[in-house]
Image 1 (tube, rainbow, N blue to C red):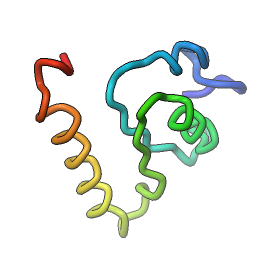
Image 2: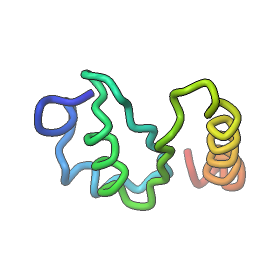
Image 3: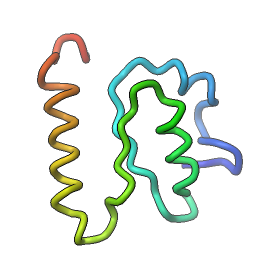
Image 4: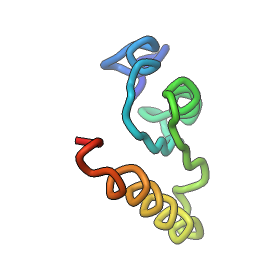
Length: 82
């Protein structure tokens, strides 16, 4: 969720220093504006993003991307990612 400038709970420097796998799905409504999600994905090191995901015709590509992300980021190195 955003707070007119960035997200509520952290600042840009915090996000830049996160060292964990991340998949960002930018929103498209008032509490979750796309521009903030895209910015988070841009400054978050190594983040992957899924831009088109909210419409029914994106359900299968969305599912495939999320499963691929989880398999690659979590299942291949479960101890490392705890």
